[in-house]
Image (cartoon, rainbow, N blue to C red):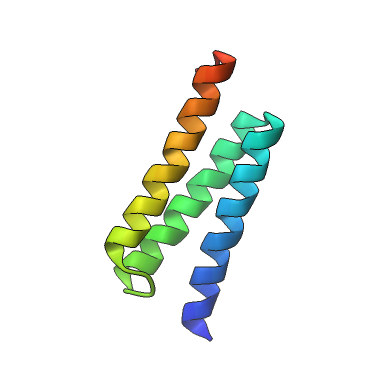
Length: 75
């Protein structure tokens, strides 16, 4: 039960971030992404998900955010 909490929270934050990126709310997406990074770090540290899996998810999420910022011209 305790491990599921971290896994589900990370999944939820990732979904929210991707939805915000799709709608163009990049500042809000970045705030939610920070929560996703934190949760993924905790899950990786506790081996709820493999640490490399957590790093890969964070990298992909950051790449999506950076690509969206590049497409809109925001910094």
